[in-house]
Image 1 (tube, rainbow over the protein chains, first blue to last red):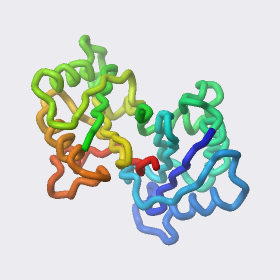
Image 2 (image 1 turned 90 degrees about the horizontal axis):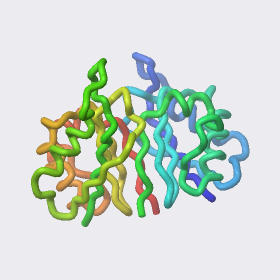
Image 3 (image 1 turned 135 degrees about the vertical axis):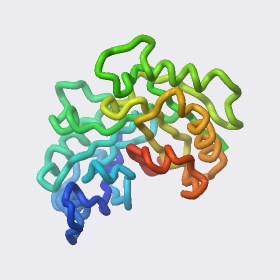
Image 4 (image 1 turned 30 degrees about the vertical axis):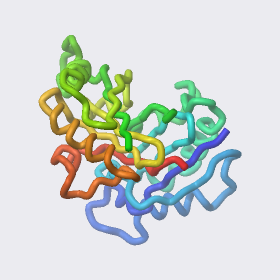
Length: 116
Length: 116
């Protein structure tokens, strides 16, 4: 099983003024500091087009539902990896509600059905 | 070239009170009344998890970026099909900015990189 964890590195978060490094870059850095869960591959991406809801990440994999989450920050890195591990362990991307981290229950921006 | 146009049929739109048929179902009905553009396949889906931003639709296809749009209604059906046709005609899902309908420029909820 597998999961691609896309992290928007250009997200400005909710800050009114631009800060460098960008909150999205800081979130990516937080996610890559430790070991990744089995089957999870981290990928930086420039813009997930969820700019008003940044920082944002997406989970996708062949044959699985795609999920996008927002309003995240570097402090959420551990929960994001926990959720990504649960997603990677599924066949279809559908993690039982009670096994999802709270940020994944409450901060979903969208999901899209699997590609055949 | 190809595009799957996923339409959330359970979206309540921005109405405070539930109405039947649901705005998402009405949007789906509006989209299926006429002929679909070449390469565009319409699919109803129960919940795109963008409930606070409904009605919502998603465009996906193998090898292409996935896009999700929100704050839509049955009155947007023609523009959605125009945008879906432009998406279907691309190799990677990236439609030049000036060729996108205004609703696709301004009402993007998220995009996700192609699956390999």
